[in-house]
Image (tube, rainbow, N blue to C red):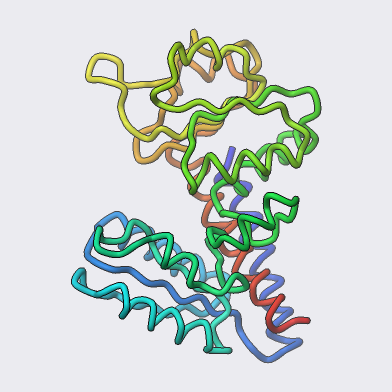
Length: 279
């Protein structure tokens, strides 16, 4: 659940990119920005740029030193906002402590905000628009669509995450599909009391519980035939080998939500391009 669907979605994006280039003579272009030398950020950006290349999307990269000031980063974003050959801007998080992430995200013009984190795009999501929504949550609900849960009426969905990257945008996407949503997190008391009620369980804590109990979600914490989506990386929250015997379906780590995040990012770049060029 994840990798195969992502492959199909990426093939569809590539086909659409080819058609748009034929129609407009301009290729979609993503510009990525990293500040500092975080190895995880470098790896994620390499994956995103590779996926862009395979889909026919151009990509440029700005690798900035950790001492880059907020003013310098804002000047670069302003330049990219004004560049009509650039259709998507992605500033890889996290940023160094001396740079305010909210300020940087808010400086990206909403039409080029392919991460879907800008205040305008969050506002649009709040009011039901899913264009340029955050890639990971969008990938999660696309998985649910694929397993026959496009309409979540009557379904209880438990989300174990409250971040701006996953949990909060995901809540709106689930509500748009008529789900009844409960939000938990790593500090929720008696987490199992909530997870056992879930028709759909989505978890993204992303760290080991303890040395003796590495998984936050074990088989005794879910009900029979629940759909379980593990977003955590690099170590899954879910005891996959035991939970898979009880769940209706479950996403693996790796190879589940990760590939879907990349696929939905490509979709966002294409949608941003369409809004700017293919009007």
